[in-house]
Every structure is written in C-alpha cells, then in structure tokens.
Amino acid sequence: MKMAGLYIHIPFCRSRCIYCGFYSTTGLELRQRYVEAVCKEISMVCKDTPIRTIYLGGGTPSQLTIPQLQQILNAAYIYNKVETDAEITIECNPDDVTKDFVEGLSQLPFNRVSMGAQTFCDKRLGFIQRRHNSSQVFGAVERLRDTGIRNISIDLMYGFPGETISEWEKDINDALSLEVEHLSAYCLMIEEGTPLYELRMKSDELRRSLPDEELERQMYELLIDRLTSAGYEHYEISNFAKPGFRSRHNSSYWDGTPYIGIGAAAHSYDIRSRIWNVADIKQYMEGIEKGNRIFEEELIDENTHYNDTVTVALRTQEGICLDDLSERHRDYCLKNARRFIADGLLHTNGHQLALTRQGLFVSDMIMSELVWVD
Figure 1 (spheres, rainbow, N blue to C red):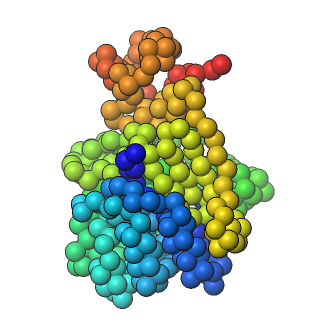
Figure 2: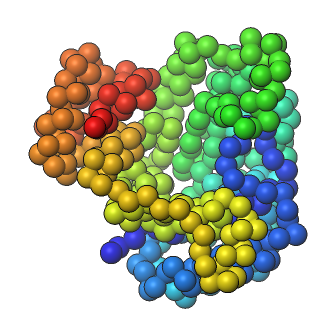
C-alpha cells in the first residue's frame, strides 16, 4: 500500500510553552538514545515503503544536532523508497535557526521549514513563554532564504488575553512582510492539563481578558480577508498557501491517505486501523531497545471511517468527496446536510460537499451533525 508520508516525533524542548498540549520533554540528555531508538523503530516498521513526504515535528526538532538529524534521515532513506521530489519538512524554533544550524541544514535533504512565530509582540511571546523574540523570526527567514530554502511556513496565534483587532492586524502585516509560502493560524486554545489552563483557573483577571466568540470571529475574518487578498489560497480551515505550496504532508491527513508515525506518542494510520505509540519517552525507548513497540491500536470499521472522513475532509476547501462514500453513508450525509445547505453553511455540486465561508465559523457543530451515530 502506498503511504503518503513518514511522521517522526521529536519531543525535546529546551523549555515548555504554557499553552502546549503536545507530548514533549525537557530531558535533552536523552536525545542521542532517543535518536537511536527512532532509527531502530524505522527499521522495524518501514519495509521498503514508498514515501512522498517526511515530516519531523515536535516538540522542537531543531533541538537535535545536525549529525542526529542526519542519522534519522539516513534511516528513513535506507528503509523506505523516498520519492526524488519528496517534501521533507522540519519544524524549527526561530532562535534555533542560527548561521551554523542553517549551514548544517543545507547539507541535508530538507526542503521545507515550518517555524512557530506565534506572534510578533514580544510581550505576548513572553507571556506564553516562547524562547524567541520577534526580531529572531525575521533573521531566521533571511538565513533560510540565503541558504536556498524556498518553502517556508510560519504559525501564528490569535485570541490572546487582552488582544485587540488592531494588534492582530499588525501581526498579520508582519507575517505578510516575510513573504513566506505558507501560513497556519490558530486561535489560542486553553487545554486542560497545560500551565495556561491552571493559570486561567486561578486568575479572574485572565478569564475576563480572554476574547469572546464575536471578537474571535472578527479576527478570523480579518485573517481570511488579508491573506486571500495577498494571494494566499485558503485551502484548509487554519491553513493558507501561495499557489503550489500547500503542505503535502498535512494534506495527506485531511484526504485520508495512510501514513506512518515514528517516535514517542506518534500516530499511524493505514485505513484499516489507527496506532499510537506510548506517550512516555523512557517506556518508548526501553520497548524499542528490546525490539518491542509499545502502542495501542484501534480497528476502523465502515462507520468510523465515514466519521473520520467527515471530520478531516470537511476542513478542506474541497470538502467531502461524496462519490467516495458508500450509498448508505452518502444518503445519511446528504440528509443531515440538507438544513445546512439551505442555511448557506454548506454547498454541494452533487459530487463534493464543502463548507461555505459562513460555515467555517460553525464547522465543529456541522461536523457533529454529519457524523454517524449508532
């Protein structure tokens, strides 16, 4: 079976951001042992598999050394058939993108870099405990360009406590001035178990300063208007790309193509099942070292596969391909979609079912109404 891509989770962070709910660790002394475990897992899982994208995410992959990154990529290429024009992405923190790091990166097959800028307001960067400042984002992009990277993505966040529309517009303007090929933007989420969640629970002032739904909607609309006017394609709810620069790796998640996940807490999907590795770096390494992957598995039946299609495909500009659904699921989907089509929240040409711009703002509600309920 053709796999869309290889995701490799690098959980190391020099420090944790207060909003982050992804699995990570500050135990940098474990890096080399972890890299060796990742390479061994690749040898165990990948058997000459065709691969069109490789994505190193985290965590902070730029916390690895250049030799460690080389070691991982060597294993990826040895045990897979990596396409010659594969998209190969590394996530980086702006302050890690030094001259020496970029020079080392240029000797590796990475051709896409994704950076978490988050905001260009240094005060807000300090609040969420990011390590970089806004000037380092500009410097990082310049160094990457000088080294020949022609596919750069940045992440932005909005909906900070006390943030105004004009402050968000400045962030958008700063992002546009970088002329990057891809931009992802997310409203600040306060997830249970994060330091930010605990801070909100303790602080009445913080709770009062969080934006309401109307302000969040206005910020999202401004984002869409400004980026589409600047020539970016709004191809997924939170993602914008210049023509020809959609994230090929992330697009494979949204169109339901299989992928392999390597590393602690990494997920894999092959249409028939979903697998996720143990979210504990020491258990992960000890298991791999003994030749035993520690993971959980969920078998995917027809109804679950339909629900997966609804919750990922509907996020995209193209939406759900109705022709790919079974007759039973197609009829169910269109029956439940009827009122949203009438209200102008969904549109269909008979073959595709997609969100309208108005539907983007209530996408979660629409998806919950379209999923199959036994």
